[in-house]
Image 1 (cartoon, one colour):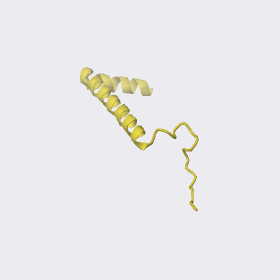
Image 2 (cartoon, rainbow, N blue to C red; image 1 turned 45 degrees about the horizontal axis):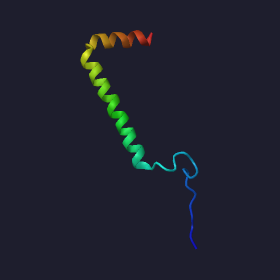
Image 3 (cartoon, rainbow, N blue to C red; image 1 turned 45 degrees about the vertical axis):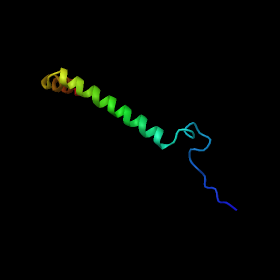
Length: 58
């Protein structure tokens, strides 16, 4: 006799890729976004960024 617990990802599109797959892709996306933000901040002076931020908030 075995006791089988209902798994939330059974019979869904997320059944095959497990936690490692999603961790790698989430970390990769976070790395690319942070790298892009660093390059954008390096090329644009801080007062211009602040001006655009305040302009966007209006």
